[in-house]
Each structure stands twice: as structure tokens, then as C-alpha cells.
Length: 100
Image (cartoon, rainbow, N blue to C red; front, side, top):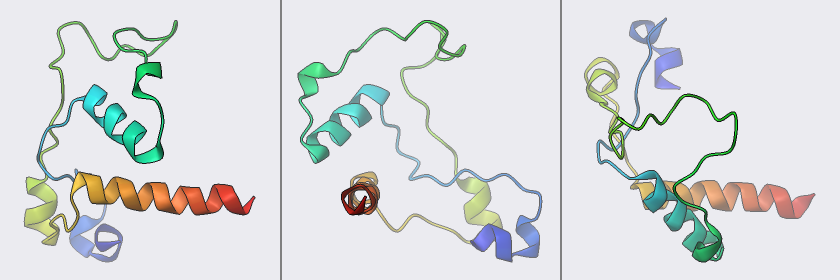
């Protein structure tokens, strides 16, 4: 919202992140735990046929977004941890699913 409302944000691309790297598998396990999904059912190490060109074998095991630009231009900073943000997203979508 800050990017849309600020003249400085017009046409810009921003990374909004905590700046802390999280491996995809750790994120999958974290979500599974939060929703009560059996972690043993998560298939690691392979991608379905036709999966886009990422990740490449040469890729790092995780990416860390750099939020310097959004912090500098818009004064944005994270107010939630990744865990808290996931809790909010899960709560939001759980309420939408159970209403239907």
C-alpha cells in the first residue's frame, strides 16, 4: 500500500522481506506443522515433469531477498516474523475455506 500511495514508489519493484534466508524445505515443514500435515508426506528432492527452469542444480539452497530499496525509499520494515506472517495467512485462508 505504501508503494502504491507514494510518488516514489511509482513504477518501482520492491522486495519486502525479513532479510533472513529460509530453505524451501524448512518453509514446507514449518507450514506442514502449522496446519497439522504429516511432514513424512512431503516429497523432497524432485520436481514434477515440466517444472520451470528453477531451481538449477547450481542454485544456492535458498535465496535471501534484499529489502534495502523498500526500506530506504519508503521507510518500510517488517513488523512480523515469518512464523507470525504464516500464522496470519493460514488463519485468513482457513476462515475462507471453512465458510464455503
